[in-house]
Length: 246
Image (cartoon, rainbow, N blue to C red; front, side, top):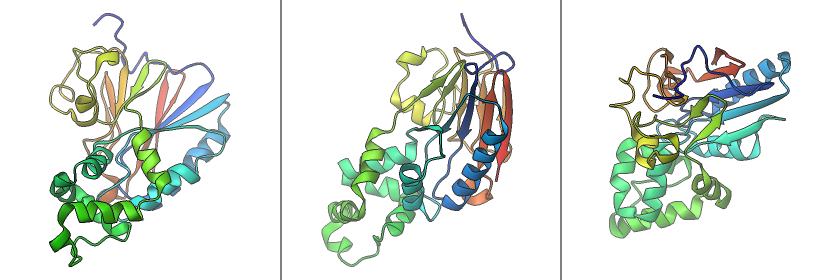
């Protein structure tokens, strides 16, 4: 691919220190711990500016989705440029709000824990008479407007220098500007097994691994935090990379 770049040669903008955080899935305890470590690392650095990119999947599975969203909105890392991207689980949630008949798909993928965290019980007797629309309406009553505003405003991609940050990955044969929403949120096959360099090095989550994955064309930092207790951050500065974990 013309203009492709590899991890070994990829750089972030001069003076810029970039942190990217993998899938949180309701583990606000790990998020707070990792944010503190990110701040401490930044204070030890000589960077002119710092940015943190959260790669999506803030909700579901873990028990504190509400608190994670509140943290992203109300407690950003001081003096950082902060970017929160869309994950496929945020897409699940929004699809349920727009089309409550899809609720079963969301619940099957961990949405029940998010509803419960907001004070909505799927087992409520009214659910069995009101159905999915009742459940959607009850959830909207409990969902703060600032949380909904955040969820509806999440971008799909962020770029810093030679790096592109997305939730799941990209379609290798497609220019970054033309990537589909579906691929950015869902792709595995065709991306994870792609061995050639890409237009930019892709930093992503979505597919959990026990260990961090560093390939020539991508860095994968979803370490299954909700069940492993390990939330991972990659640190990018000049042409170097390092990692911070809980």
